[in-house]
Image: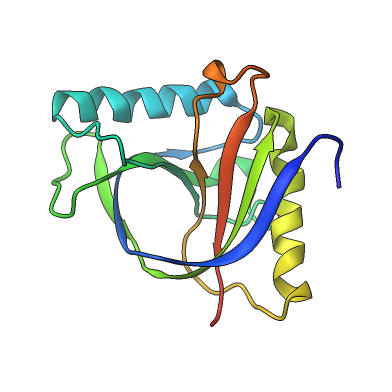
Length: 163
């Protein structure tokens, strides 16, 4: 465990959600500016469509295993949850995140601690008799780190697992 890391890992039954997103292919690890640019595109679009609601979730989906995919081929989808039936528009695409059982690791961390948190979640799964299943692995962001007194990110790391 790392110094000052606040974490909690559990299994959560998540509902289906609809995500308005932009996709990026290429290196992303540690590139906060990239994530800010991608989220800014989605947020500008959502404001223009009156979709900025208090209960929205900001999510980054990781489509490829970074241990087996070259950085220039790694795909991420960055977006926000929107009402079902929302239509794609320009570079904003729509996807559905399926309902199911997810291991959810909740962390309050500095930006350079994401990799360690993912490792903790992925290690927790077999240690607790579960197996990761095909489906979206994602981060759900719970705060704006620019407003956190220590600049920390409050994030849930979500991995689909068997029942």
